[in-house]
Length: 47
Image 1 (cartoon, rainbow, N blue to C red):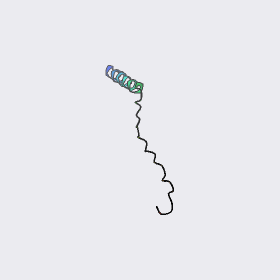
Image 2: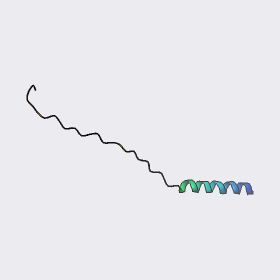
Image 3: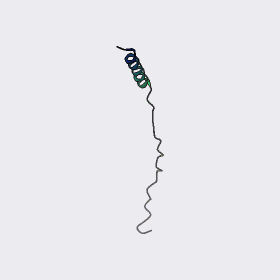
């Protein structure tokens, strides 16, 4: 094979290895919890 083809294969292999060697970036989303509300108490029939 010619030198240019070997060089392209070497560069492609190096790029592939470097792309696979990167550690995945962990993405996370912080969600604020909703405030807990209490149920209204029984105060009588029509108050």
